[in-house]
Amino acid sequence: MLLLVGLSTLLTVYIGGKEVIAGRATNGNIAEFIIYVNMLTWPVASLGWVTSIIQRAAASQERINEFLHLEPEIVSNNTEDKVIAGKIEFQNVGFVYPDSGIKALDNISFTVTPGKSLAILGKTGSGKSTIANLLLRMYDPTEGKVLIDNINIEALSLTSIRKQTGYVPQDVFLFSDSIANNIAFGLTDEIDEDKKRELVYTAAKQAVIYDNIEEFPKKFETMIGERGITLSGGQKQRLSIARAIIKHPKILIFDDCLSAVDTNTERKILDNLEQIMKGRTSLIISHRISSVKHADEIIFLDGGRIIERGDHDVLMQKNGEYAALFEKQMLEELEA
Ligand SMILES: Nc1ncnc2c1ncn2[C@@H]1O[C@H](COP(=O)(O)OP(=O)(O)OP(=O)(O)O)[C@@H](O)[C@H]1O
Ligand SMILES: [Mg+2]
Picture 1: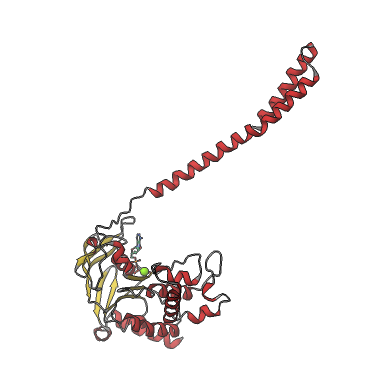
Picture 2: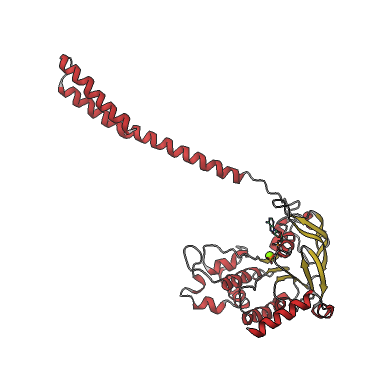
């Protein structure tokens, strides 16, 4: 653009000069025309500028559209809000991750009656989180059925299931917002401020993070994430536990949620959780025996299959993988 403007000035001077020599124009005329050319510089330059902005925006919009036009693979076939009792059943469930082709689960069957707890133990990559994913209907099983209250979850309303489930994911996700808002995330907006604050405080106490938060200069109003402080791994996990239990869900899923806290804090949280889990169906996923031994049933996964099942005493008597892991972890604890 600037080159064109420069050339126009040059041209004006050159042709104007010839005209003046020939006596057909005056020096004033040339000056006049140069001023005209300069007056046109800004509009012409901005024309180019706007064109370039529009082109960049079009490219961005294309990418945004790609995302907006994605069709979710999981569709809710029902919108009815149903209060669930919390019975969970897996019937011969097999699952292959569509994008990697990895067979993560193979012929998994179990039933958890309402109010009882099931613990899932197993090596890394054995398929524990996949069970939680299927229960939350992040994916539909490749084989078999997942049922809640004897109804196939594909026939239940997606929002209804997720509203009544408290989930502590393995990778905690926190928003760039205050601690209080992060904990209150699952609550409906209908609750008034005082009640909300009370619920947040209680949940924080139960998740043994209250004292930590009180130590921050702005307490519950402390911002986290990009605009605020960074929490430690264990603090994040406890905040996520508080977020899951605040809405008093019928089903609780804890995916390895105590891996980053020390054994003392683990004990305290487990004691509190025992109270909270009363009357709620819970799924506890862990690597540590100490987190799972009080569960009503424990299943031991290996390569997507259940290799041992039963409660703590039964599994100890079996003297298999579970007992071996128990001994190893007891030794580690003694050494520490
Ligand atoms: N989103 C995904 N896409 C493709 N493959 C996946 C996905 N998530 C997990 N997998 C694969 O499925 C298998 C089971 O993974 P899963 O996350 O259930 O293991 P896990 O028992 O929870 O392990 P960990 O104890 O490390 O959390 C693994 O082989 C993993 O690579
Ligand atoms: Mg996992």
